[in-house]
Image 1: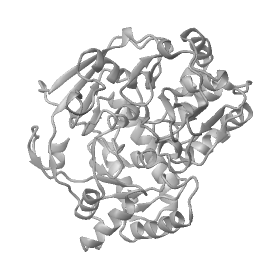
Image 2: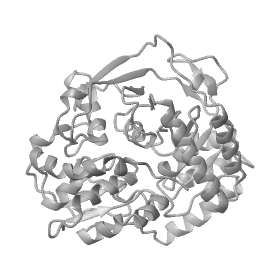
Image 3: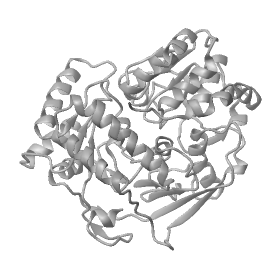
Length: 459
């Protein structure tokens, strides 16, 4: 991927290359710095497709946030970029819709982790450089392979499989919870490559590449069934042509539409070498993952089984962030339908994008959530970032978000990270359930399995 983007047959770890930036993401917490650095580069127009979101300040903008949104959005548009509106989407949810499987790019959010292609998150200065020049400097990292084998067991969700990566690495002595010189992390500063779950949709695969940020990886790739990628690109092309392109004037949108149309006429995929050399290999035996896995407070690598923490009282549940898509909210609704969440339980639900909000409304999901006692919030980063909403001081929380660092969601908050399905059951009970209770509730999803799992379809 990187070699092709740099006009080379390939690259090796340690090589210095300057790959083309096929796509650049910018978001509002670093966007003003990127704007200033673009101006210092005396750039007249962006050389790379650049998309700007306001997902970190969408939920409750203060006056200065609203001014920033207007000024930065106008600047991006003037430079030929794509300026999203506040409330449109989390940057990754919308930005990922513009991708093709050969794309290499960068972005100013640590979760710029393309589900197809490959991206390298960066600071605002490198984002400005890539947007302005159309390429970026890169010292190619090593790669670590995560190989999934076996069969996914009943009741195990995509989020549990995501958490199984650090869980397996810890068991194999390749990751620990140490600090400083005592820290062991096989994934740090390396590209995390994943194989063995080709049946997953591209949207599901993003949950794996997304959390490579929590593994401190430099980037991540996912080995797909080509048919899943083709279906994904076809779906996103419909969105760009029939929805987004009709209301956005940026010429780059038309260019990206043309690129997608050209690729779909003759889909090609870049594969790895026949006998690649990895810095290390971590194997995950799916047959041994028989109950939900959670990250315990307050470290995304501190993975525990549900049995170890069952019965822990929970004050608030958050289903949202870039780790949630339309399927998560359907699953939650199927579990809580006809019931009420525990009295005084604060249940946050934050769909990641405007289009999912519309679809969930039409499907009746929002009505079910509201009737059960959940609150539905504006699409954005919300509690995951912790700057547009926080939990109560000292609250114990179950969250679907990416990370659970100290004081991020609220002062003194103790945050577990787990699946939306587990979040729904926990909201009903007011505590983390036993495995048996969880499995009983999970059975509600079996009859609607494929209906729930179907990605958002664009007309």
